[in-house]
Image (cartoon, rainbow, N blue to C red; front, side, top):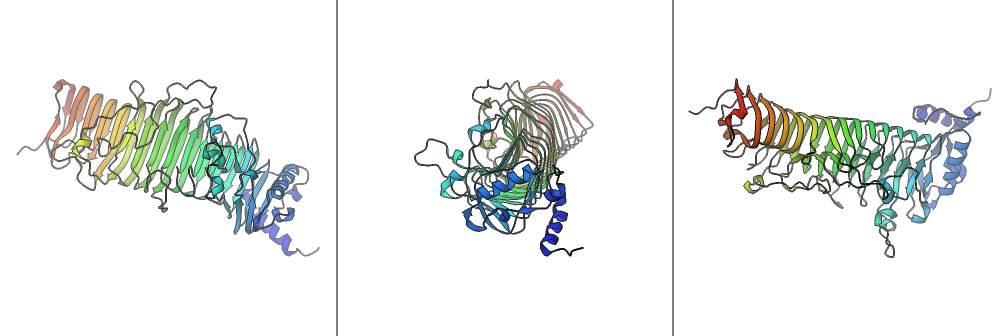
Length: 549
């Protein structure tokens, strides 16, 4: 028996270490040969940071796929490439110290027009790593993929009528693929979105580090109309939205779990929308930290982030069965923004406008949001189109405060077709949450505090039906009311404690019916409730009365 050479030993060690990350069983008759990782250097690629190695790397991918699949190593070094197409059964393995650099010439990126049509057709043609209808594919390792997206080549051409984003490749774009794994890598400086998974099944994204502040539209992650997706242990700091679920085509985004991630953004931290044609269902996100970006330069958004949790349904579709829990949010403008609107944008030009969307069965729990601006958080449907069955449980919202009496008196326009962004209504009349057009609202152990005095009520609920509120602890403006109900029918309010110095605990206005106040402590309020309404609309039982001494 001949002794193993150093090269053979290294290859065996790499197979053992990365075996769990390979895309799947090797197809073909010579499985033992195909399973030995090959290097792009074996195909003539040069790691000098200048030579464009697209042809060599693509040839290696094509040959490995044709041979039944296997791994293709990218060793330490700076390897420049244009657009690559990943094929069935191939895993690109970037070793520690390997940097795959995107070419700065748009001519090195062939355009792609996928068969699956979606609104994203209007703003993307190119990608550094592309795959369509492939299966058992992977990008793994401890190396880096750098799109060099800040290069002037990715700005708008002065002699072109195309929008600038059509000149900016995505870093990774997989369309209609199955059994996808992207793990361990650092993804940096995309010319546009970092990762776009469109109409894919069985996707695992794990332990990724993403940095993107070099250009517009530097989203961290976009999961778009996909099914059975797991996102775990990822870290990102990007100029545009961080973890984003979309539905830019007719298929829903469903069966997605997100856990144990730390993200920063000048825009939204955890977002469903804005494109919603196919809708969202069976989504669970837990153990997520949303923090301010450490990058001072921004293209838009806000230095400390626009939104924390953002659910935005505006192009038809159904959002249902969504659970978001254990989220820590620091410093965003608006910790929670939920919007059911009616922009009604078709997903392709020849499709009819979508009908009005729906949003139902959403639970948001165990959220701590600190350092929010005075803007406030909004949860809004539209007249005749309420958000249905929404639960907010164990939530603390701490804002900077400073809201004025003029802010408190603002009436908020509906803006049904407006772009859904947390700033769309301006400064809200509630310091904590402004909630409008909701049917079936549960608020349990919700606390709102302000760092500075604020002249606004902590909570305003308008056009809400079937409210259950337990254990509210909400600050109040001087001699004002912490809680305002306007046009509310059917409410059970219990276990709440009036804050010191407030006037009435509750102000009732508009159409009011079926309000139950049971087991509350109003001893520090001047009165339990106020409002020019029929007293028969309010049922009171077992409350600690106001102390009028």
